[in-house]
Length: 506
Image 1 (cartoon, rainbow, N blue to C red):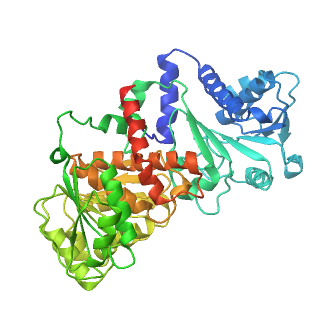
Image 2: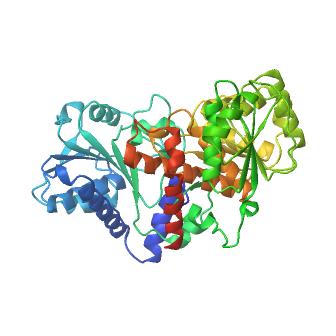
């Protein structure tokens, strides 16, 4: 699913209206009908709660007025507040103002004293400014935004929270609505997918409104949102006469004293992700642990008891994962350096292996082409530098991937995959319950298994992060977020594959 800029979205609206030979007012009606249908389903238990709709002077305000009319038809008690604008209102705003039923008498907000008291049990709909906003809010509107934010009412943003830019950074001092829910139209906005804007967007949903598919497909974009169809298409059907040699042999270099649990998690995840054979190379202290906890894996041990010091023979493997629980001993650093310089197969690099690389510029220069790096934000900062905001972090991600011709899986709520081509892929699965130790080790195992099975680096990244998040969502459905463990994600990988296979067949 493409993520378009605000300007491209407006162009898609205009093109759709032109191609279908309909007025923009009719397209607006299509959008607000989709909003109201969503609202009725989402908040069916709040039908008797008052609905306060705050409307700006543009098309987003026109949406709010049309929503007021439709909610009134469904017996909601609706009150409309209009930001005074010296009679400078968009044509579709005026048209919907004239369509309001007599029972809805709009109140105009000319000064702070006009602001209404907002009951705690009210539903507030923010229809002040949408994706057309191109400058920070000023004047009376900033006071109104603060007034709404200070209330205890539930806030639902129509298309975009007022004051939030769709695809460029806001200043820290900008006034922005803090919505509990955002309902947007047709495609997600980039701002929905970044950690710094989460407090404004809340829980977000996108509903289709029939924008022209050809226009969207032909619109250039470097940002994509991973919908289920993509990993389902990537997922390979296992051949009837396949055998363990058909599905690759992975090597996992992992573990140190006190951190063998990371190796167990990564190994189990690798095996659960379809690899034919797995060999784990670990310090001697891990031998009994792995032979007991992961009997399906073969175990090779380093001469050192508590950390890995020597690179084993790597000539027989189809993919190598390195990093979980590795530690940063001097000999381990040399092992990482030698691996970077000598490997002929794809690498999946995580955790301490990333930290070792980040401390040596020569190690960075030695990252093999096509490698997959899986940092969390702090690890990425060590690799690529500190970012002033989420948008600059994406620029650093693009630059790093292009400079080193590698793939970076930047982990987070919407894990972002950066590519050497300068494109970004944001994941659509996962939940806050996965914010617990070991989940990154699980992801390393999954991606390593997929690379060993001859998935391309980009395919392994997309399929891996989607399955990882989907397994987490399935675990959440049965265990909740607070109780979720990294090992639960491994346990639910089978169901995640079944779910994706079912989607592939439909």
